[in-house]
Image (cartoon, rainbow, N blue to C red; front, side):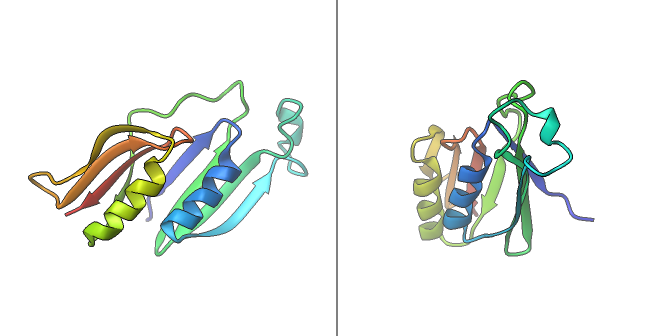
Length: 133
């Protein structure tokens, strides 16, 4: 069994996944638009080229996502995608890149459990935690 995060976006899935691929050193394995899929008829006009499903690997981890039809989108909440790293410098690099243009809830710093920890939402609204124990 594998448990993966599945992220929903309001029309920015492609940009977000390309950004995550660059920052996290991942590889987009699949990205399919609504156009040409059986769901094409179910999306509003102008959403044909939005993403029905994307899949990216980062090492042995999988991150998936899509653009929900705009009338079904809700802002993410009640969770965070957690990135664990061993090196404080790597934590700082990822934090700086992912939090830019986002909303920082807890800046990267030392805690009683970690050399570095941060909580924020990126520019696409995805909640993240960086943890370097």
